[in-house]
Length: 323
Image (cartoon, rainbow, N blue to C red; front, side, top):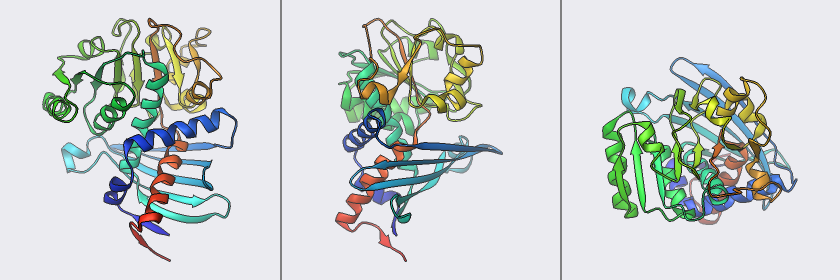
């Protein structure tokens, strides 16, 4: 088994390739090829532990098991990452463990890659502005990913920590040459852009009816367990919703809060991202539609990214082998 540290993953996985691999994974599922996934979560004091399992047939049959601990207070209180974990990649035909790798960077990149795939199909074609609500690790991955599918010219940042928002805005200016500013509140940030990324540990709604302009695309990536919520149920019931996985979003995503109020109005859940990518359901129907992508993180994204890392490691000899 090949063991890969974070520095190895960082060297082997680039965002453009990750977006392509994640898009191919969703297309495979949409076309009916074998692409199962599952999730299990456990609440801990101060955080959560969740396991995600998935399988894809790529150059060979692969399966991955990822276990992540998610502790939002870690950076401020312990100088540790919010997400720490490990991913094990298997040969899905033989059950042989092929590689063990740090999962933190893979999680950040594949999540942003999924949002970029969604934005490619669901954001207005000429979108050039993006607001980032929550300015941590995910925001940094997302600005890079979104920049690959829509050429950003203007960025708006908001975080409960003004200093974090200022840092993110400064990095955006330096790295991407965009105009970047810091909003004073969520409404100001959400109403300012065509693309909105929410990546927070919030347990109460951040975006409410009236916060979004016509034509907005929202990638809501923070809700990965039953207790988290970024998008008000009332807002979800007014807009078009596309999910990464309907069963998963119905149980742990923002969507499950909307379902708790009763059946969604017809057509409001347009479909899943795999159906959009495969052409089974339409993406954006007009430039005025507000579309929310409820992203809970599907394990086929992990398989796609990890397989790419592993195959490049095999070619380059990265990491080290253990028996």
